[in-house]
Image (cartoon, rainbow, N blue to C red; front, side, top):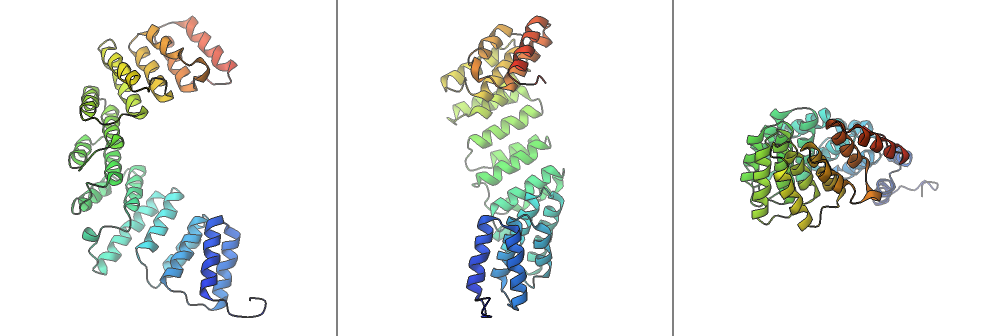
Length: 324
């Protein structure tokens, strides 16, 4: 059609744009959009959004921003495409700037974003992640405040992100507030609460949350156990709580999981129970990972078992692993 000088319908351009998005072809995308510009076509908002998406999908964020800034009108999908593009390129500051600009734009157009919410909950999750990366707790709190005006407590995705945000900043009151206002809590949310309290060295609280999780019949996973075992290794109870958690892991069939096994070795070693640590360490001799070996090595070093530590070092080097 192009060779014959015939006008190309917008539907064909749309199909070609979709193909470029699917195969992520930057060169093809640039050629196609240049052809569209030469054609004199006056695309509408939906078509502009597709151009944004193709640029973002191909990693051409600057090109997308150039189009975005010249668009006569924008909808939530336009803003979402640009925010996603900046997040994919780790440009968290610009993602936050666009988010704030989006809210101002929607507010100027008298769209009640506090009631309608935002384009998709994943955009809020992205911005909360950006808040963590840029150490912007203030904006994170504002977002929490906006979300509190809508029914977000049933959205586990959003709630988990808020818990992670507060946990990263050591704001346990925020963690508890989000957790307590949730309609239901799953394994990820409970584990997020445990991780936050463990990070702030509230080890007794970690055990209390773990027990409460068990009483509520919530499924525990390997990440739950690895975090709890980290707390147990730092409690001054001669490994009593750690042994109880170990028994629970055996009951659930998680003892041989890499994360749990490493956590057990580290916990027993920290408690000075090197025989127990060695027993766990020897369970899957062929499947030991570097983290597990390093945990055993550090246990021997901390307790002055130099010969055993040297043996671990040589065994690691013979396996092509580097002691840390």
